[in-house]
Image 1 (cartoon, rainbow, N blue to C red):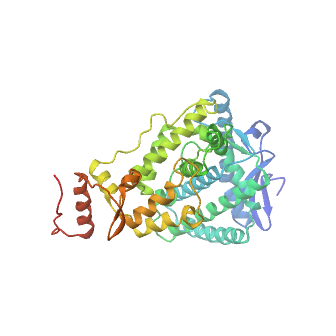
Image 2 (image 1 turned 60 degrees about the vertical axis):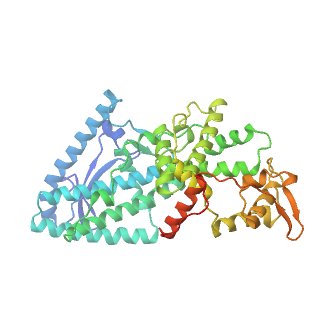
Image 3 (image 1 turned 30 degrees about the vertical axis):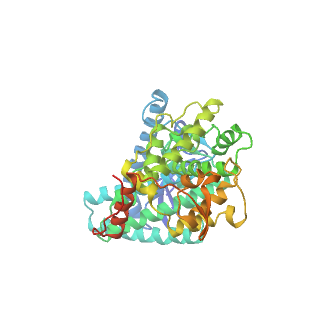
Length: 432
């Protein structure tokens, strides 16, 4: 068999085709890969020889494609085909994108074959192969045995322009994620084999075209380094101020990583616009909160650029949202909810008798208390002179507050009416 059919080999009882990779094509394959081939999926020599003819053509086509790939990379390095890049680590989002791309290609290839029709023997053989692979790979996934899938992952990376020479930890993470994608692809193929519909755009959406470009390791300052520069810009910056700014900065970091951006230096203006919409539409934050968080991001980036830590400020032209005067007045005049009160009086100011490190001093403790017991507004309390604290001969001490009606008062009653669902209450004593 070796003399007559040098490319025919056996693994166990199954025949397979095996070809040595030509030396001039070695650069188009993963490092240290010397041979290529695949199973002929038969134990019968006669059937194997019949399939060997087609398999030889397939291997030759593979060599031709690799040869063209090398020529294109050599002559057109700036073309759409990514240049081969050696990396030692892939980010989680890059691994997920590669895995998702595999699943999508598997489903689309399977659909293409079915669209052109399968003969009875082809259909039955495909079903048996899918069932066998699903059982074997499912067992590997259940045991966490990811080592056998690594060569497949490296080959797929290679086809995407990545020479993945990963660290052991990163390699294990990538192999596990990719193995899940392979099993998922088999599940979708089996579903189609059983006549079920698979929405490929839902189960495996197309991935961003930036998978390869993002394998370039981020070399700019980290999120923590940029934030530290902002923190140290003001001597002894209050801890409360730092915490309030950490919230939007951390949210932006998570949002950026979800979109394949690793560092603050790679954030774009369009990402900032998407992030602002995310805060309002997905997190359901108020206009005031969204604008406040955008303002904090602007300040962090402004200082980073001013200190020449970053080259560009992606927040420079970003704008938030404008709240209507009516909604602003309604929100301003409505009473605190029980949850609001619990948050206020559950803070360290009241539970641990802490005080603000800013300029408010004792005001942060006494104004909320007086508001709670008197119903007065914060500006009414903050503006009280000592002469407005008076004593009644019978009733005792009181605050002499002059209540000046405002057109904004009408918004308070309208909001209360909408909240209660009533239309019959008429506000009395309002000054137009």
